[in-house]
Amino acid sequence: MTARSPRMTSSVAPNGSRSMRIVATCLLVAMAVVYGLARWGEGWQPASGPWIGYVRSFAEAAMVGGLADWFAVTALFRHPLGLPIPHTAIIPRNKDRIGDTLALFLRDNFLTPAVVARRMARLDIAAAAGRFLTAPPDMDGRLRKGASRLLADVMDALDDERLGGMVKGAIAHRLRGVEFAPLIGQALEAAIREGRHEPVMQAIISWASRTLDANEGLIRQMVHDRAGTVMRWTGLDETLANAIVSGLQKLLAEAAEDPDHALRQKAMEGLETLAHRLQHDAEMQVRIGRLRDEIIGNPAMQAWMESLWRQAREALLKAARDPRTALAGKFGEMLRQLGGMLEHDAEVRHLLNRFARRMAVGTAAAYGDGIVRLVSETVRGWDAHTITARLEQAVGRDLQYIRINGTLVGGLVGVAIHAVGRQFG
Image 1 (spheres, rainbow, N blue to C red):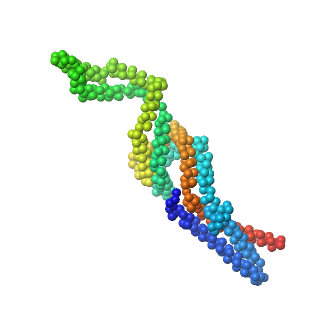
Image 2 (cartoon, rainbow, N blue to C red):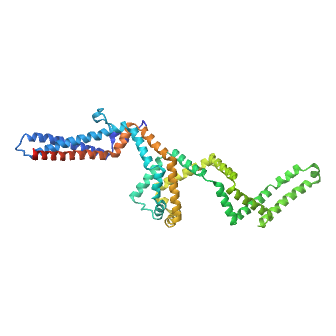
Image 3 (cartoon, rainbow, N blue to C red):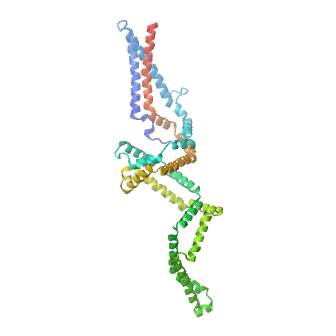
């Protein structure tokens, strides 16, 4: 990372940090001036009185404390006065170790499956989501606007290609872990048991009848082409074609009208056999699994998952940027109904919380190490000026308070030492 924005250089720290640095430096200079005046005033004793000693001690100790804390604060980020003093410029010299330590901290405390599972077990995500959807916070609140803007900025700043790849990979991984054959078999068995297959079978028979009517000419041509010369001379080929077409039309018409027709019964036996094999035949399940993997790996399926991710991302961005619109109209009413269900249906809450917990644990297990490596490699990729500027921007104001406190506390300690010296000297 060689190009740096001017905002990231240490010379333009935030206004708060810069102003506190000026205050701390001015306080140190003021102590030096007070010390000089006090030393000059001590020459006029006893006219000046014993108080001048206390002033001198305060200013002297304050200078020592202020200079010591200035050295300590400066040594974190650079060499004081540009001198290569050992154990200074600590952060630039150890940025790689800092990145590795930060990555290990994230992994050990946030991204291990055990930690994620323990934290998720204490969260009722479903109930929180239900309360939010049922009674969303004030749309005009500054906190809500800020949170929405932050969420939109974070989502917009994330690497779309890498994040999309992670989402697609997670979806594909979950799909490959699902055994579809037993699920399809159970659904088919339930449909047959409850009679819900009848409309489908009726639709298949109607489709077959329409297909037969649409291809009647093709059937007649096939019979004519395959009939012998004698049959064509005598016109028997046309008679045979008429018989075939009429027989098929009659068969389909009878099957459409009679629920107990032999054709329907045969189709029913085939469906029951298929449902049983899907649930209990290992070879059939392996074949369905291979078909599932081929479909998932198909470029068309990958493009579909890509489009799903992009649509979801755009919808989330739109909702984050304009939460008022997202929760208005029929869509908002649907979300409020969903929120009410999440609040009052314990079984749904349990299922959703369990799904969220498993998803979080699975994500931590699958991508925790990748996130850790990303943090470590990102910090390693920063140059010394960038990491110094970013850390100084984050904590610079507090560090300047340390300098101020060191100056004042040092002065008070100097006064105490001077008082003890006068008492027992």
